[in-house]
Image 1 (cartoon, rainbow, N blue to C red):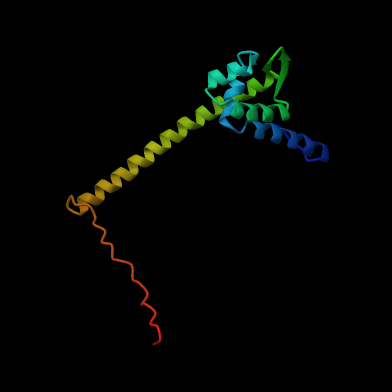
Image 2: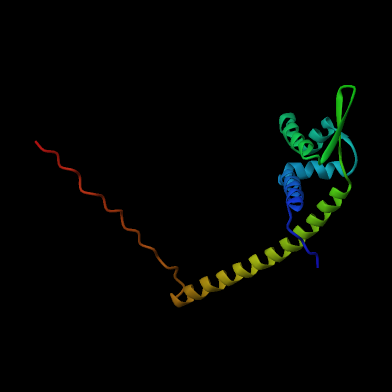
Length: 150
């Protein structure tokens, strides 16, 4: 079991980690990192593969650069991006496996709940003789009109 201690130095490390997770907290940025996991790419290839606008990609790449998640280099009139540390790709793979495992559990739970709700609805209909419960709505009461003095 890992033990975490609290100290001023550790607080700085936690802030750094939180900043990295904030940079990862967008589906487009995750897609960019997954692409870059295959190797260095020019911005044009990122735009083409993801089907996003240049301004959108620029904003996301800027966020990833600011958090030092990606590196870039310029060659002639092209800018190339790469993942700064391959260790991050391992973290993303672990998160993918974590999400998949829990998604399967959540889907199974949702199916159980739907089946439970469906069986309750069927039992109610049988109790009502096969009829659905009818909700009668009454019109909202209006406040009496203000009487003007004459």
